[in-house]
Image (cartoon, rainbow, N blue to C red; front, side, top):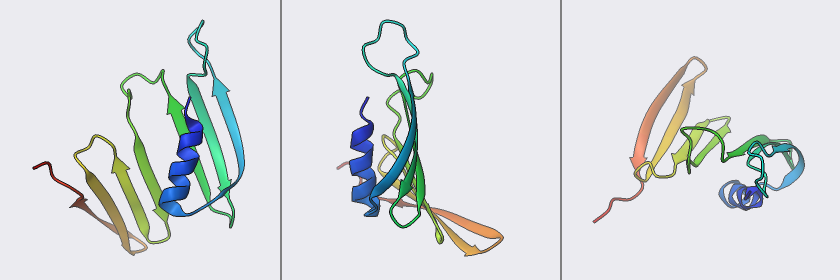
Length: 108
């Protein structure tokens, strides 16, 4: 599996460094030479927390990469293969969220 690529991607997007992790890695399909499912909990330097889920056995999620970053001001999310749309969910007050999308690129 390619979990190490996710660490580099997380560092590139957020600038955060992983300090500690706990992982549950398993092979569900007998005879496979590599792990086919991983769930990883992360703690970053400075106290932020994160999670990675990587699976080749989750039906309906083939080659589905979602990136979501939650912060004190809202959510930044991207779904690869979703037409280049970056989703922003900002917190306007403690009881209300407003959603919008920004088109990152269009095919010519």
